[in-house]
Image (cartoon, rainbow over all chains, first blue to last red; front, top):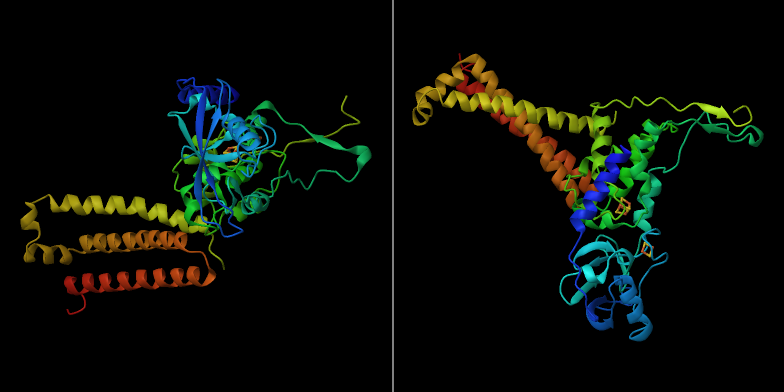
Length: 276
Length: 117
Ligand code: SF4
Ligand code: FES
């Protein structure tokens, strides 16, 4: 499965391999509005100098530093790891720090806040509901046999590479919200957990260290739960980390329908002290 | 007892597969004679009088009503989210589904002649 994932990522990269256009400058058409102050939205155009390796985030930070310090942006790592710089770039949800200006068509780049999230200011949106859906899936390993109270005898789980392969791709999620923003069901159903939370439910459901299978599936098996996915697949096509949330959702549905059995054997516990 | 959404969706998928089968048989039966002729009064009544065919029609009615009204429920649930709306949609679709099944069944029984012989 690991090879399949690498192959898939390579395929995605190949698909997204764009012709580079080298320019000296680019115009950023940035959506501006302060929702809390009740300001109506508008677009401000800012011209910034760019180089071959300039990312949209670099360009925005240049605009903020030298042209208009009031542009609101959220970012942190600048290396597609923290998931905080998600925005709509030329209409598609992307990470600003992972999108090179030279790969964009045209000399103007339109930058807007992520759809499906409550808008706060300029390019910043409110992630509270998104994180709440994630937390609601109990995104942690639960195992009633784990002896975590006895610090002296702390145990560890024995897991085979095949066991890891089942959920590995889903654990690459950085909670950037791009899939949630691209999901057509989230756009209409505010109670729908969205592709990120649902694929995380599968990630823990299929993890053989976890024994909370039923409890977790009961959370998603709801009127507004996993069944409301229409399999548009837009979540998987925008994910910057090669996660396939649509696949996770379909696999979990298979388990709920009884087509696939969760044949996972709960991982054995091994005492650290007696390991050797 | 609360019915889980997965149980409803299982019924949704099973009725879809069942409906595909019975509708296919129903369409094939239209093709055993020229289509216009198959819709003539005498032939239609003869169909209703044929008990296995009347059962087939009843299955088409029940399967499509269950599948269709559950589909409508799903669409309406996605439109708005509030307890009153959700309860209203559930009750409305169940009542409408039972109404359609009852009316259609009555038509089949009347046309079959069972109710009058
Ligand atoms: S699944 Fe992908 S797109 Fe969705 S939150 Fe995780 S990393 Fe972002
Ligand atoms: S700044 Fe961290 S993902 Fe872009």
